[in-house]
Image 1 (tube, rainbow, N blue to C red):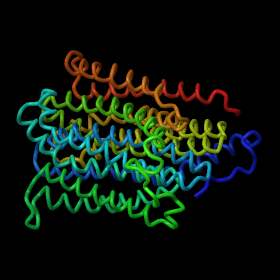
Image 2: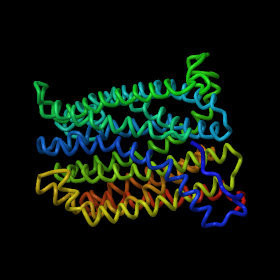
Image 3: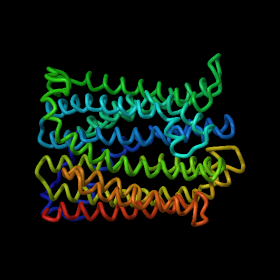
Image 4: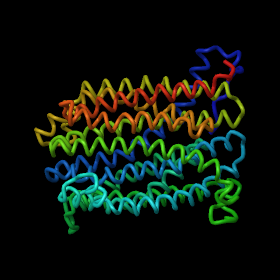
Length: 463
């Protein structure tokens, strides 16, 4: 797939026509990415919705295990995500072989870091105990974390393969695989949560085991799609491996690791901050934890729309950078931000207006339903700033900026989010809604800083 050609050069093209071209190119790439990313968390929604009908407290157990698993997963995916701008730059230059070789280097790198991450998640019970959870909560959450741990490897491999296909403008494969994965996850949940058809009744641990099995199936499917593409050797996905680290060795993967470390650290600061919010919610009691867990799942699921726009924005900025068209790269970045703000505003309004009906989808417990619906009124305001900050983060990294943007995440999601969130529920007199208000403010700080950085990097681009 190629970008839609402009009828005239950017310097002479009418502004409205230029905007329409960029929006068209962005959405054509973004919508399969949106649905693919949403499919990842749709599985989590399925888990929570089915656990909400299994037994009181099961949702909370699953969320505690996820509070260990998700930060490590997001850091691992971030560390691997440097493949996306590297492949996009090579694709912009028309170097297909380098695209595939970068995927192979990314595959090895992802296996190394995700194996280490899986070992860390396996220690989930100890982690939860150190973080102040009760022995009972630590044991139950730790069992869920252990069931999730092997799936971290598979999910990271899936992500690297998806980044490669998306950066070469072939996002449909990931969407198709995710659709199949969700169907399989529902079936396995039915068997392993409730113990149907002679399977053991495992509750929250069963949901985690189902997710792990599905993640491995999805990873193998993505690898098969890449290896079975037309002329795989010309595409660089087969051929001499050369070294343990893939074609070109350790040195050839420098830029990928550099940008990946930047994204991994940034993702780490953000997700650790969000995990801390879950722990603060747990300190308010099981009802508050269930309500916050449901709200967080809804925000995270719809955030996948924003993340899809962010990935597409990063790919488009990277491709235009590879083509040595800085003016188009800058315009692609600002277009992505604008589309994100409009799209997520609409979704936020829909959540606010439909908060009672949405809460009823998640649980049939009247107390949890009422508390979650009240929390959705605040959560509806998270979507715009949270999506905008990830769009700007992707755009900045697509320009090759590795480290300066990290300072925005350190300030927003470590220096501000964790202590302010703790104060809101322990000293400020807020319930779990105070945690959501804190998240909104910190996301606004992040997007302002990242947009400023993107403006600085693209200041010399012609209009």
